Length: 357
Image 1 (cartoon, rainbow, N blue to C red):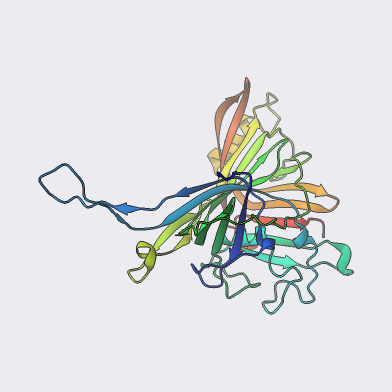
Image 2 (image 1 turned 90 degrees about the horizontal axis):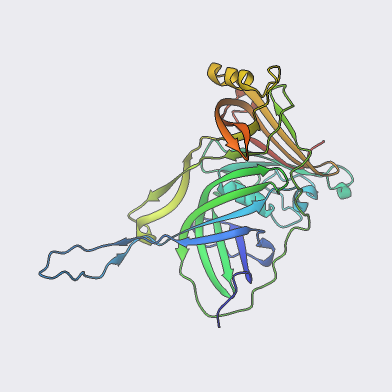
């Protein structure tokens, strides 16, 4: 009997040893959209000279899987209710939820590190938050879990048949579109563990109880400028994900994946308005672009009460271009985020949870 795609679950679990299968629990289910796995296993052809056009059998080399999916960016309950007595920055601490929330583990596999701030007194105040920043030293070892390398095991339960991927790391972009959810578009690469086959019931995943907010009433600041009309913007991490080859390793001599570089940037789309005094016209954007002017960009989205998301890029340089959208003139603002010593050389800071304290 065929299985149904909708009757599937995706789990992720941080690995204790890089590339070693870490078995997830029901609480490790990840809320994903548009999950697309791809078998990228490589073969080696044997092009032997012989008096026939028939080919000899190939040899399987590297057993690789990639997958793409979307994850909501929101103020997660496990972040808000972090009330561990000594805070999640202490490596000796065991958080009440049994570990970092799944979104934090995912960001670690994308080359980010996490700094948690626990609830203030009383513990039921639910005003904790986490700040995610790109890791400069690799592997990414947050203070919270100094013994973990940041790689993931991914389990895809496809109607009872489980596909396992180990040693996964990858790349992502943050997509912000008016009237939609703020989402993280992810692509991960890892080593395939052959599906065991057979059938079993798909367990009910334990998901976060908080719904995402629609992108609306979002605060956008370019330097000191806060006006303008912005239909959408994208922040690309642009991680360089490389293969680590090792003659001692199985899986075709592929030891693991690592992130060896990044170049955070993206595109901001804005309407081209007529008023010459308006900073979003050609004078303002092109003046900044051609002069290489550096601006700070802050995007703040309140979800509920004091909770939401703040994205901060302390140094941004832009280069505008022209485009048309549904009959309107627009500028496509391609930007690069750069390090700032005063901000710890972090090109991007992502705060999830309470955004007021």
